[in-house]
Image (cartoon, rainbow, N blue to C red):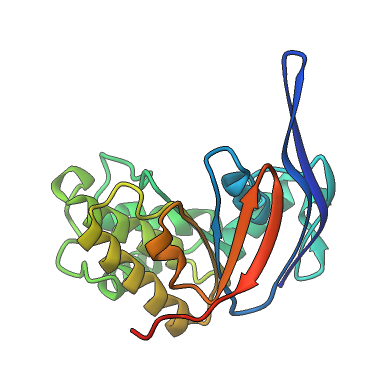
Length: 229
């Protein structure tokens, strides 16, 4: 699935040079569930952006199924993201003037799925996250947890192989957080996804079989026992 080799990401701010990633090596196999944790500014989100093809490394390679994302043209990289990778973010990123169903359908437009199939697949995806009765609701008519469920449905409606989540529970209360993590874990199993999540929440991190800790751009990965559910 993923093979990262010697990945660095260097930013320049005035006269200062910052290594957000400093020689990261990482293997993620098909079907893995990996959580990335670390301090603010340590490189967590930068690493997730590399996995999603949202940014390119300064040096090193990010291979997905043997293809180095860093060497792809922007058009081909956009196609890979549309076809293979689903994204979930802390801020939901829903379009406020579109209904839940319409928001989910937007993920299928780049894939040139016909309108009737888009509607059918969006309704099915929303049903799978427990929102089958909320298809016509606008984001402003939904709770935070429900909005994140719409965002998850949007990520999954295109049937990706990879799900990347950046602090997906960061804006949620503890009870809703647990519901969303339960949902994500269930969907990971059901769809045989490769699932990588960034979180600052140790209670969430403890639930993953693999934990990557990143600090000052340097990564360590450990296997961990998963608590019985």
